[in-house]
Picture (spheres, rainbow, N blue to C red):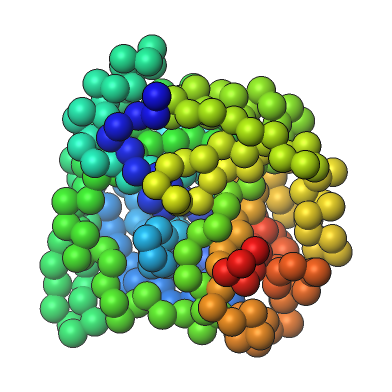
Length: 287
């Protein structure tokens, strides 16, 4: 039985060494970014968000070393930039913590935090969140997971920043590189109390719930076959390595991305070396 207090993937966290440089890079790829946010002092981090519907991408940078961000700093030291974490949408973060404990894991939280938000009108409000985390040690193929309850959704999903030149609409899937897709997929499935299903090419899918983006665990050989001709330099050796997004118009996506676009039979891709360690794929809605 799936956990009752998570909906599905809420957002993914792309950890960067230089937050402002990363923001400029993703803007160059045709994304509209929120103004820079600064998290609470104990988090010691800042971010830019790329708002989609119903999910989003978060570019995260460490501003001040703290105990809380020690795992992120270790990730940068060991693996470099890339997809460090995935968040689920939490219905009730406190009840979720009890659910996670009920299936045998030591949940962390809930923890409340926030950040100021500059509005397109020039005013300011605050985004407030309540998060519950699975143990840091429980990270399938190195991918950490947590759940985020949005207390002020209107301060995050702001209509003016939800339109992108590359026509990105929402996350279609998250691809996770591993030498053992079955074992890591089953690990993820156990953490969220779901099942794992093998696909025709040997990849293993774990649904996140609510019609949101699933996790696809696959080997490097399978990843290369799915993205023929895309250079994989700059990609971590394991963990979440690619984001596949639904685009409203692939021609517009290719134009917005420019010289960094690589066309494959089913997608317009951006190599990981051009997107802070993340392979980006833009696909048509039916794919």
